[in-house]
Length: 81
Image (cartoon, rainbow, N blue to C red; front, side, top):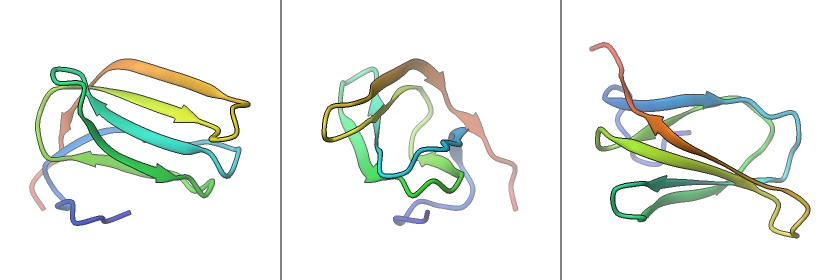
């Protein structure tokens, strides 16, 4: 996933899900701002963000069958390329 995010900078944990067609939201905890929402394809990917800090990662089924939020996920600085 690119979405205009730099390939170096701040990242969150990689997301690996076996189930397809779920949605993911990245939420900045200090403001409650939804940074982005995307549909998952079942492929692992790295969550990239522009700013250091704590984020919540919400994974949910838009049809209402599944909804889980991981809170307090801190950014990790990626090494310079």
